[in-house]
Image 1 (tube, rainbow, N blue to C red):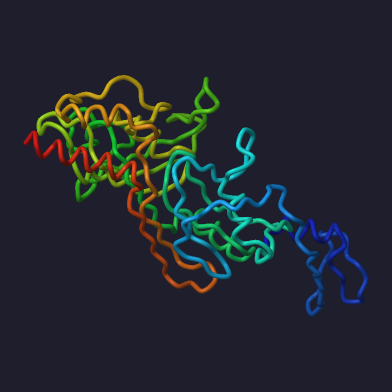
Image 2 (image 1 turned 135 degrees about the horizontal axis):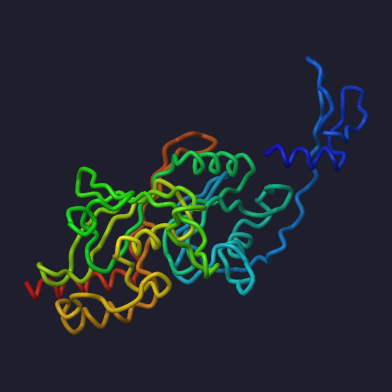
Length: 319
C-alpha cells in the first residue's frame, strides 16, 4: 500500500492503537513494541460501468492479467471515451474477484498504449501487484518491444543522422535515440522533443526489413525497444529522426519518399493505412508477487500483417 493510501485510512478512523482507541493522526509517534490494527473497509464500486466486451487474455492469475489490446480501444475512460474502454471490459471480466486498489474495486492500469496502437498490456488485480509493477516500470525493469512500419529506414549509418545530439549507433545496427519529451509548446494534445522542460526518453530502433527499391527504400519494419515510457515516445522519436510511422497523421506529414518503388498496390496500401503502424509485440517482467520470470509475445494484428505481406510481395517482385 502507498503511504498516501494508509494516511487516508488513518484519517478515516480505520486504525486503532495499542489501547484499542482509534488513531486519527498519521503524525503520531510510534514506540518500539507497540501494535496497531488496520481494518480495511470494503472497496467501493468503480465509477466506470462494466461492459461485456470480448478480450484477448494471454495470462491471468489472482494478481494480474496480460491482455492483447486491439487497435481502436481506449485503455482508460476519459472525456469523449467513457465507454468501450479496456477498463470497462476488465470490470466485467473480473467482476467481484477484484479486491480493490486504492479503496476502489477496479483494475490497476500500470502503463498504457495509445488508442490506435495494438498489443500487450499488463494490468494489476491487487494492491500488491500494482505497487510491484509500478516500481518495476519506474526502475525501467520491464522488457518492452514494439514493431513499427516506418517511412524510409532509420539507419544509424546515414550521414544525415551522424553527429545529431542524443543519437548514437550501437552494436547490431541499433540507432539509440535519447531526446527529452514534453508537451508541444503550441498544441497541448501533442508531445514533442524538448530541449528544456521535457522528461528523459530513450528509444532503440533496429531495422528488421526494408521495402521498396534497394537504393531508396520507402518503408521499413523496425523493432523499437523502450528504455523509458513517455507519452507517444516511439512516435515522437521516430518523427524526430525523420522517419515517422506509417499512418501517423499526428506526427507524420507530407508524402512518402520512394513510394513508387513499392508498386501500385504497396504504395496505395501505405497511403491508405488508417492508424499508426505500431504494435506492442513483446512484454517481459518478473512477477510482482511470485517473482517468476514472465515473457509474452504477440504477432501483428490482421491489418498490419496484411500491409507487411503486401510490401514483401511487391518488394520481391521489384527486385
